[in-house]
Image (cartoon, rainbow over all chains, first blue to last red; front, side):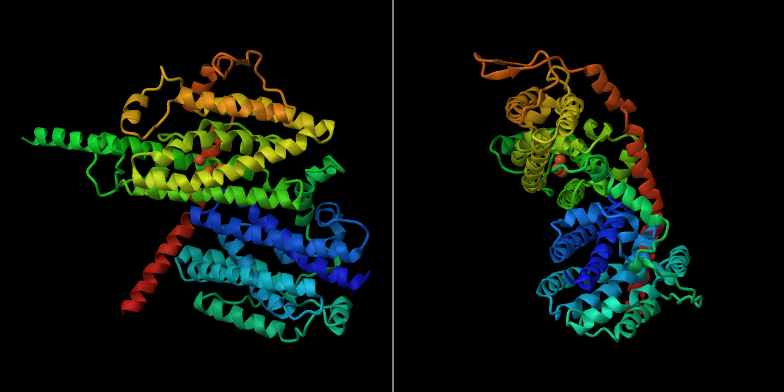
Length: 250
Length: 315
Ligand SMILES: [Fe+2]
Ligand SMILES: [Fe+2]
Ligand SMILES: [Fe+2]
């Protein structure tokens, strides 16, 4: 088993899993019916990505576990998702801002991962990229609409950006895992990730008439299993059935 | 003079219906026909939307990734059904916003089944199997409804509902052959949802005030009791197949008629839930209202943005 490779796949998988969970909390509560459908659809894509990636991680581990075991039976400190994706939904603008900051990063990541030497990752990236491009289109349109909509919507979404900005530095987090993945060709070159991401973000914020917070106070830790207090509650809910009724088929 | 004309038009209208010619949005139709359809289609649309809530309640707690994805897809389908149906009602001149306001004010009804809580995972099975199953019984005849847009919407909706029904049954089957706890969970869900599912077909024929006219107009093609009987006949053997027991001591097969006889429905409970006194009526409407209120700023922003863009284009 390649420990770094498992770790690397879990990071991508957990981003999809936890964000998919958050979005599915909206189901039936959206501001318009069309958005209920869109957010459910995005959640569905993310859960699908998580499933493929977790199955792959389980196979790489070779301990006889399944993707479901990894999704539902790890402990809090073993989840590897970004702090950004576990942040609460807040209002619709907060959810769209969180989604946009993430989609802008994910599109670049999946674009590059199509060339991964791990064929499974490459295939998942190719499929997920199509979905993620649509997610980015959807979230950036809403950021622009809300930013350049009414006075109230502008104030609200600017506030969401101010709240979430501190979690964006972690998008570019790298450590020995990434270095090893890069050396083995599993992770293609991502040295311009931040630059590319900033291009998208600046362009959209300009059109949305939003300003990037000057507060550069940054939070990170998710990639190492150091989460915010929110994750524990997500897991309590998500894992409930598997914990209450262990070892059963559903 | 005018009265003669209307009578004449009504006669011609009924002739078309009798010949199974579809009525389309631009065709002349009696006011009562239009109103009956608007009431029925918007009630159906509301049922799809309110129906998202009891199942949405279990998405974040689904027991594995496959079930989570299937449940998400199902609830998304229901939202889609709501959307087609609101559009079908709009072809009759019913504004979507106003229609939804009628739901929130309590003026418009929706299927009472969604006023029962989903307490365990097995309820996702029971709802798919019984509630989508009953919906299919109700809706398949509407695919031949005299009003074109409603009939066509139903063709698409019924295909998806039968998919939901099979998925729900599959959940129940998995539980029924699982551990004793799982089987008990499935049986409990069946016990709670069986009678409310039978109530989904509405009051018995003697009590149903709209049936006769709706049948004449081919908006309705079978009576409530006929559909209910059909549902019981199809569902009882399915329950037996997976080893679950229906909560009805009077249930028995009548060899002479070829139908199952079943016990008396608790009509007092039915009318209480219709009136708004079911376990979740208040929660469901409060939730929908809250979603609309909290989304107001978003809808206003979208409108303001669209106007700004249009103004910039024409400037
Ligand atoms: Fe439906
Ligand atoms: Fe339906
Ligand atoms: Fe359905």
